[in-house]
Structures are given as structure tokens and as C-alpha cells.
Length: 332
View (cartoon, helix red, strand yellow):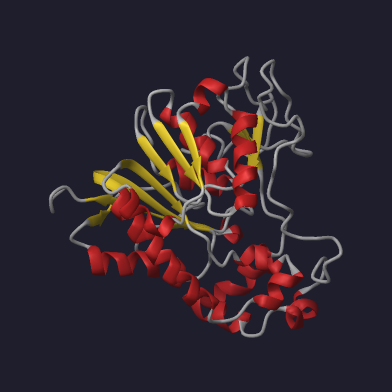
């Protein structure tokens, strides 16, 4: 059983000692990376100032109820955002009016709630995992999406949660131990492979593949002085090359008729629709976009997928995702 300490959560996106804290726009403009404003203003036009302001605010986190907790947990009687709490993908999450509570443990040591961005929940739920599915989570840390996939899969499927980084992989294992009972973890394998080669490793093997790809993560960049210093205009193009390699591997690993969700927390079109467009142009004979809808105004449709941005979603995101289905013998 895992550690009895509080679960690993992503670090705050803003740090009290950071000089961008509590500054007005004209005060922090000079602290942005060189070229950052121009790069994103070109993509978002007049929307950019408001989007930038929302990125500098604390991100929204909700408490998601653990389906394996005993007794079965229920949300508190009074919680915020009742309008979105019934949306697909976030039905088992809530946000308290004051502050998110610390999770309690059941008799088996399982934690009751997991704290995460609701946009991430919607993206993971878009994979629509079914009981008995073979599922691959290619870049799984820190583990919140893997928990969602494990719950949807039930005790009749198989989940491979892969994370290349040893440090992040260790945190992933702790999360799985803290939230999933032993009998459920028997259906989960944690690996540390280079996911760009997965299509060669296990071709045509999985019913569902989630690729939450490493990305620019601009909200994280803005909240960290060291990350701002490292940002360059060419970073997004560089990342998009590896993202494309990962997506090609996801397509190779997916069964005919299976489904892939490609996701990032990036703003850059190069890393989002750009990666999917490249795949469709080069391998459109092997896959097709999955057509569905998501509730507005929180979710915005893009050319090849959907996105949630914090300026129009009460602080959610950024999160982008596209759903692809692998063709069966050249036909659907």
C-alpha cells in the first residue's frame, strides 16, 4: 500500500515570491520572455490580453471523488458550480465555496478525492473507455487521467500507464497505490518506455490510447521564473516534432477501429491542431477524426479538435484534445 502522506499534486502555477505576483499588466510586460507576446498575439489576436491575464491567475482545481473509496463517497450538500458539475467528464467532482478540503482515507488506506483541473477530466473522458478495454496511457504522470481510465475500464480490462521520467514514474506509482485497491492494480502495468517506439513494440494492440503529450505548457512557463528564462519562439516547433512522433506511435499501437485521444495543455496551434493536421495529411488513409460535440461555452471547437481556455471557463485549462479513430482495413 502507498504512503500515508497527502497525494502528489502539481505545484502551484504561481509562486508568492515571483515578481509577476500581483502586478498589473504594464508592470509585468517587461518580465515576459522575449517574443512571447508577439508569438501568441499573432495566434489569438484581440483575445490575447484577456487570455494572458487569465493565465496569470491561479488555475482552477476541483476535488474528484474516488469511485473505489469505501463507503461510496458523495459530494458535500453545498458546493460551487452546480451548473457545470453535471457536465460529461466532471460529474463526480466538486469545488467548495471556501477551500478544497484535504482528502480522508478509508479502511484500506485509499484516498477519497483527487485534485485536478476539470479540463483534464473532460479530455481523458473523451476517450470513452469501456469495461474490458485494453488501454494505453502513453505519458501518464502525474496520474489523474490514469485514475479516470482505470475507473472506466473496471476489473475486466488492462491499462498500461507509461512514463519515461523515473522521478515522475515514481510519483505515478504512488498515486495509483493511494487511489486504487490492490485487486484493481492487478490490471495495471506501469512502464518507463520511450513512447515514440510504441507502435513497433506493440502494433495494433490497444482499444484505446491516450496521448497527453509533453508540451509548451505556457501557463506553467508564466508562473516560473526559470521557465520564462528558457522560453524561445522556436520551442513550440521543436516540441511539435516529438509530439508528431508520439502520435504516429499511438496510431501504430491502436487496434483497427480503436480510438486515440491526443491532448496537450499548450496554447500553440503548432502543438495542437498542427500536429493532428500533419497526421491526417500523411496518414489519413489510416485514421479519421471522431465526430462528437462538447458543451459550450466552456469547450470551444477547433479545426481538428476542442479546447478549454481559462478566459472563458472560470480558470480551467488550457487543455486541447482531438479524437481519432483508426480505420479498419482502409474503411470505417
